Length: 425
Image (tube, rainbow, N blue to C red; front, side, top):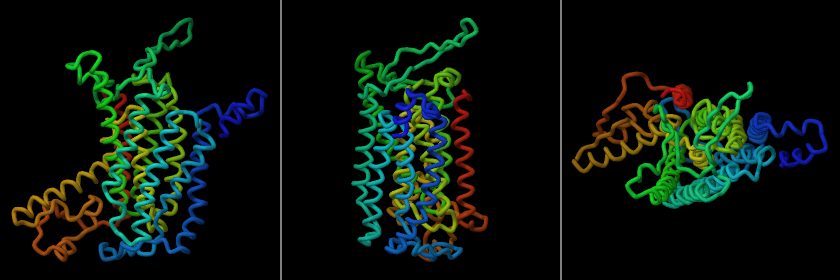
């Protein structure tokens, strides 16, 4: 809103009006405001949750070797994150930008799904929450909305290549025609711009592009669901999901800025996506909201984000990566989310397979993976006396604050590596 106000005032030479034309200025304002909202408003919201007794009722000290009791801690704190993201975007974002609209739709859509899940768990006493198939249906629908919008919106275009040369001591940039494309970035490959349509060349020149877009939409659905659920699984310790996601958000700010800047697109030889610089403003709000939330969510947590926060966080990361056509970087950038998801899938499938053979076998002591490091064999055998564990570990059990710190360090390394892939070919 303020962007359009100052754009209007600029024609009257209003002092400082031109500042709102700079993405860097609006992004810094967004991150500061989001941080202030999540810290200041967070305190009032937490007190309200306590008064209304909207607190955690399922976690207790019996699952923690350090006897950390989390019963009675307010939940549904993801509402703090959502508000801290949306308000700065409404104030400092270009609300007619198609990418900003998609990100706001993603935030509200997954926020409502997560809220419904938390509501059922908290107020109806159903620990399973919202039916899993309803969650998946919601994620699929969002993936369709994003994929089809990128396919059919006339504003969602790109220049597949940007080149530059010097004329009269002035750098001149030449852009390829503005097109709708399924081109994406492949890490560690020299010619790292790859078009999904090329996989379907056997269908003929016309049909391969149709097949490429169908593949792109399906991939978008898979990315949204996978990253959203990965973030949800990562949300099991104080500060874990918020800390990891803030780091990932900073990396996406860098990638979005490169994609929306003609100079850097040329330098890094990636697609130039006009309008994608607005994602920098959105992701700045995202990072600010998460850092502010850590004020209350760091160990010992005074509030949990719940599915309202974790599902939305993962969806935002996934959709942002798809918009800037960096979705193939997500296995690196979101490596922690990937490990958490794979650990649960492997654990479940191995346990089921072994059970059919009359055995009790686990790969890890407990999943998601972060719980493995704070679970003792005594705890496992207490619940399943005949169970065998492949990876028991030899070191002492770790306190959750140390596990969170180490996981965030790993994410920091992976985020740096994801950015470096633009030059490492």
